Image (cartoon, rainbow, N blue to C red; front, side, top):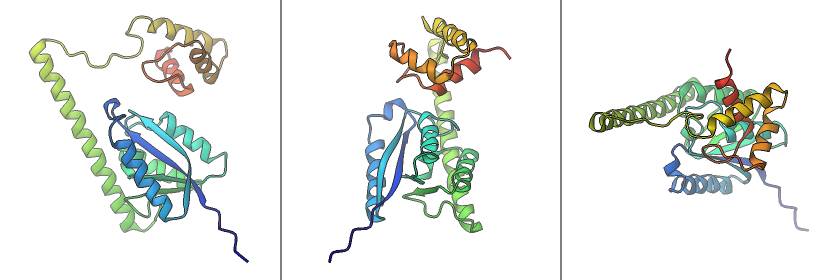
Length: 223
């Protein structure tokens, strides 16, 4: 009599690239291939992918990252696999906060390149934090290079505006006022986002999420 195959452990895969220009590059295929390979070798089935398109790894709250945490707490999957730890974060403080939160909740966080992320061995913790510090330094140096490039452009042309905040472009201020008014009427962020998307009202990129509606309210509401 043949034995019944043991069901594969379920996990989520998390993918991220930081620049909009990288969305169509090799970042996502490379990360997905590494995670898929690891999963196959360890008897794991990736049941859902969370993909951050053009989102900085220095942000503590991101649409997909937050959604993944909600999913971990609600549907029985307890494992997240990333290609490298810097895909999760490129800020050492945020990296350590996330690792602490995941393991406090008994979730399993796996990097295909860096083993034993949740180990409490002091030598392993030290090495993990070294990797995180290097990723943070690399990100900081990139920011400095971009800032220097903008300054050179400004010296040559007399202007270098960079990315204008939401509300600067035509029509955006009206959307901000609408969001604030609906929030004042007691509507929640999810309801507001749903209506904006249904009406075809577009943010700068992608679609509206409760998180970016909330961000606008907090930023444009006087304390």
